[in-house]
Image 1 (cartoon, rainbow, N blue to C red):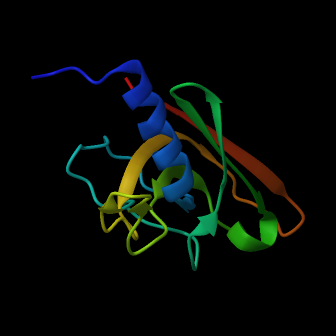
Image 2: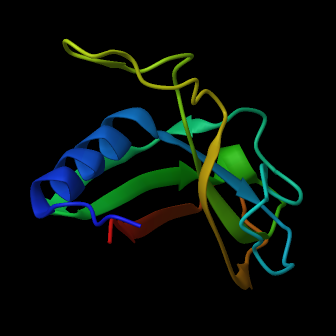
Image 3: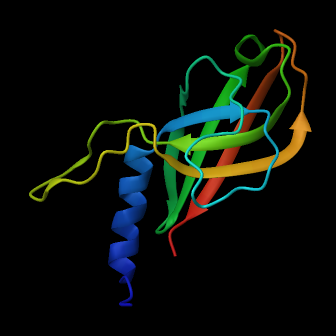
Amino acid sequence: FNMITDEGKKAIARLIASSFNKMDLGDGSDTTNPRQTSLDSTVLTAKQTSTNTVVSDTVIEFTKQFTGSQIQGNTISELGIFGDSDTETIPNSGTWADIQNKLLSRVTFTSQGPFSSSDQITFTLKVEVE
């Protein structure tokens, strides 16, 4: 295999940050598998747009605050980051890939909740391009 240059990793991080901006929450708890394409059991009616920031050259931070009304009565134990567009176009290079609803990353954690309508919770996930 050939390595990816530092500048290539920076570009990949920017592409990920601009393209994978949907967050979903669920109550699943099994081990994450690289072949996984969805959460075990989503609790949202629709994926929500996250705020993504490239916080260093190759680290992307995905953040989203949820209101209790979005997750009322639920417990949360898994989070996923998904693609948002049918295709992502790279300037002067054509179409990159169909990434809509494609799972980039999934993490499980100790169950939080249940939530009341007045609660708020913020999730922040960091991903590094290595």
